[in-house]
Image (cartoon, rainbow, N blue to C red; front, top):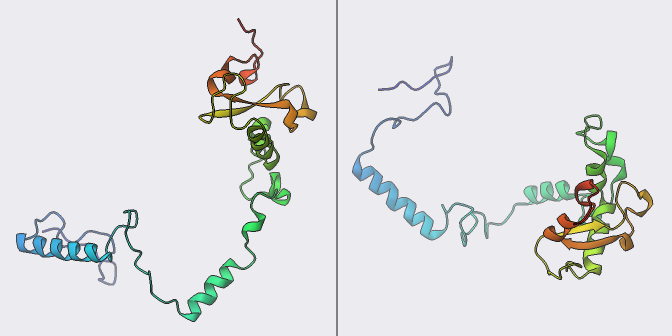
Length: 183
């Protein structure tokens, strides 16, 4: 029989195993546990949260006033109205996880709200359709007609963008930041 771990005061250490570890439970005990679990599951009380159609354990349970106040205080000052608004005060060295500028310049620029808005505007203008082959939807990419690197002033100009599917984008002479000659 394996000994369960105890701390200096003689109490069992949490997570150190159970009495039944390495042993086989009696058949009647397993059947009893199975019946109890099935009953709870049928009532929706012991259903895993990821299971479709499962009822949350607290559905219909009234929240007491103390908990309501805590939830209200936690949500104070947070609104969905600020979603999508650039937070310039939290960028670069002001950000909590700043590591001294290790991200490449292009990657940083592409993660900004301005770039994401430009990309969405290009997609909407072209009706989410590749301008070269006419494929609608799928894996679309926003391509700069005049390259990102050489035309800084045109980076966020919608007129300098076009919607391309992945295959058509790879065929362009500037795909991946490298100039190619189309054959």
